[in-house]
Image 1 (spheres, rainbow, N blue to C red):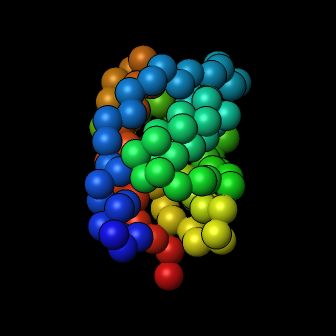
Image 2 (image 1 turned 135 degrees about the vertical axis):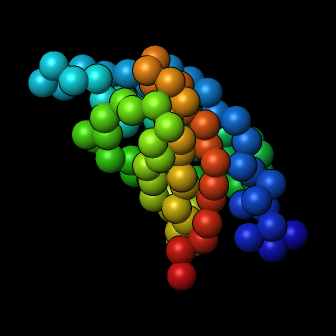
Length: 100
């Protein structure tokens, strides 16, 4: 199965509370987000993930999306798009595209 087909198959619901407090604002907990994405992708793609890097200052705004960089153990890279579902900072993995 090609990388792009496997990426599409991996787009699954990733709903976890990812909240951190920063300067009085609620922000996504990037460390929790990175761990959740890595675990979800390794299970759904049956591939080893080397690292996931998400922004550390992403404000929680329901309906907004943000991206994280995924690096597979073979060096291939992808961009994971997450959507913030609600004010509780539940997120859903809505896209995974290989970087060119």
